[in-house]
Length: 105
Image (tube, rainbow, N blue to C red):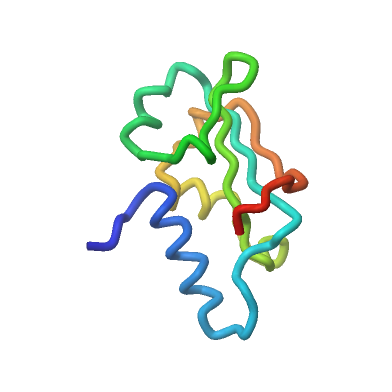
């Protein structure tokens, strides 16, 4: 059954969107970084993010996920991403697109 929220739903959505292209769907140089208030730690557990994507940094929960290669061309990319990930805007203390240092593509 298709998961409607969480990383699997996020990944599936963007891979489906890029399915007609002849290139990998993911931008290798950028990630979406979400800093989430500790008040919502229990909500995050329900979404089952991996330890690779979700880490605690400086006392805050930080979620890093890869972004589609064309994220800058997409309307409301961040809003759609939050919806797919199952994260509400009021959970966040910061949102950014950062350089990726990951080799797990």
